[in-house]
Image (cartoon, rainbow, N blue to C red; front, side):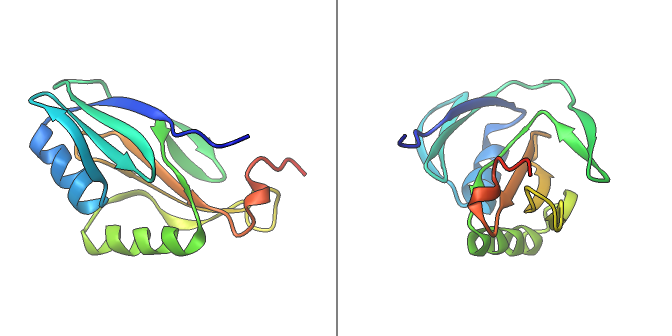
Length: 139
């Protein structure tokens, strides 16, 4: 099966702030836009920020000793791109909800992961696998 790009729309409190983060810090190309929304190319997937001041706070769930923000979204990158993004985010002073690290070390599904929030509080998880075959591994 050919992987198809996903589309995700989510609220932001300020369009200029969202453009600075998603376009500048994250390096996502900008697509179509209007005064209250902007499309971005998120590693080949379409994300759309929509102006929605006052959107609610997220919850969390314990996973492998960390308090994982819920809801969250992200992309599975290769290790080199994941490390480059982690370095870029650190250089930009992004505050990590969960610092870049390896989760489930030595177990099925071992992965590099990091969690952070955009300026509007939307939680993002970016991850990578040394072996992409472990993406859905249970044993």
